[in-house]
Length: 428
Ligand code: HAM
Image (cartoon, rainbow, N blue to C red; front, side):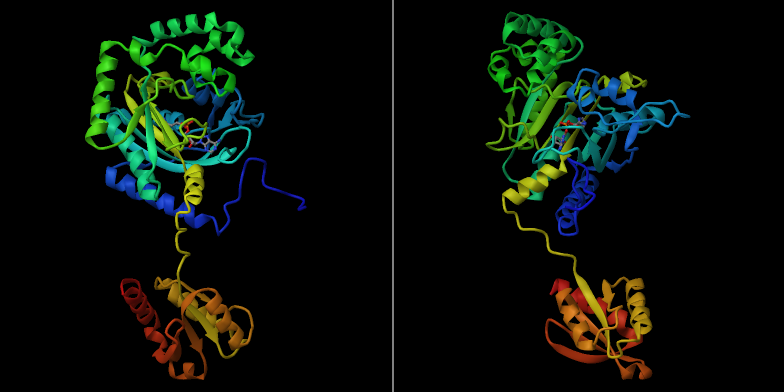
């Protein structure tokens, strides 16, 4: 056993793991470009109050899962690692007066989030999200755009069987009356409620619908449904979102008990699941509208919507579906030398190649030429550049390790020659 290990619930993403991740990061960046979502970065920690007020004090994420950071005494502020990105992005929107920009502000980021959760497969204490937000548009058009964008990510990543579970959770006009009905219902069954849920009946009754306790499943299934209690504007908004989703061909299913685990949501709420896995706890992603959050964090009333996808879970799902792993990074050239001790020349040549944009490696040890060439093959290099006596006349040997051919090339032409060969190799 090594003396030190990565903390429980965290993982090292080793070089063998990273290509699958990089592929998803590149897909996120490409979709962001196509859909017009600009990049944003916010700190990995914020004042705890940003999350307490934004996400809600009586939520699992804040009550049980927030990683609090002990402040240094001279700065008495309480901080926490971000459990999600939305609250921090909205804090930045307000802080930088982004309401003066053309609305909606469309932003996105990929980055690590931290939740002190019980670790298991697909549930980590440090995990990665692709987070996407459109701030300053009341919808319903942008709601459909956002739900479709998330759905497209899975499809283009190689998961064709992802379904959208959809609900509307109303707004400050219609939700209070619904919550009162819900409290009445659960109060009638108080004796069947686990302790935590009994407490939440007082503090945050909507959370009961989001309970992960298996004993709650039956009660939840029989609970009154919020979609049947929406006020006219919320009902109309929801009907529009559904027909727009149909118009863009996104398969969705109404899920009346879907309320999401964070308090800031209003109206549209959605989660993505693999077909057949809808009943399980592990959503591949989720999001919704949060028309009250900007105001809650000190800005003007601003409608907004967004989602976050769990990159870790997408990587796992792709592995389970046996999706072909992405090809390993391609090495164009390996610089080897007949004189094992002449490291300086090999280093000089490989540096020139790299400066010219060629992916190259050199043997920086003092092994015999035959060993160096074996290494070139093991590294998957397309070409070996062999430095010998002809260097005195400005020539090196260029060996095509795939074709098994070899010819002399002037050192000055090497970078151009390799770039040209690589281009025709890629396109040929
Ligand atoms: P969320 O549903 O809490 O929403 O998280 C979104 C996704 O992050 C989940 O569906 C899941 O795939 C992934 N995830 C959450 N916790 C873990 C974990 N412990 N380990 C691995 N993956 C996890 C939000 O975070 C909202 N901020 C989404 C949003 C953006 N709403 C509006 N804008």
